[in-house]
Length: 199
Image (cartoon, rainbow, N blue to C red; front, side):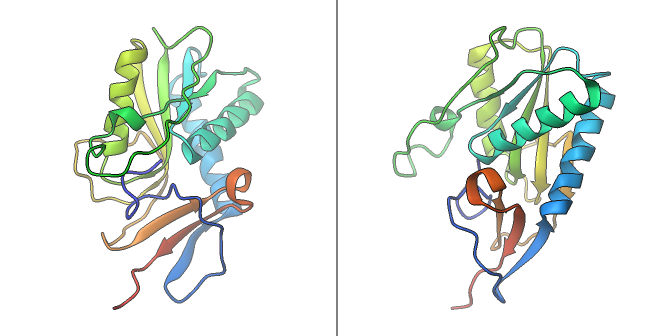
């Protein structure tokens, strides 16, 4: 998901060839390595991922959560619960933007009470998407702790929110866009930094 259409990556655009106004900051192998490192860091911090639940913020955050779950299962030999959490009704810009369809919330059968929940998103920007996810979690249960994993942290925070696991810290201008493409949804793995076209 994203904090806004001009800031984060959750768009359904089809990947196109790079232009002078865009450049790839991560390609497939880079994303693979970043997720592998994040999976190891989660295992290290949670001491084996016992009691951990991965919840992705749709759409690409949910895809990334599944990838992290697959890696942790390969590394640890234990399948951990993976789900998704829709934040649509918890966004603070609902009255400012057109109505949008509800996403999908899928919790593990045992819920999240007493678990360590790792929220997973593609791009961390203002922090408002994560705040909405925390509000949604509050209505779904009471985890022991909540952590945040993001593929890209582009800065410009508006709320006091920090990721626990980051694939890449990417300095950006506010006028730039970060677009994440994933094989499952876009047919390609890449992160592009898009510059605003001069007028």
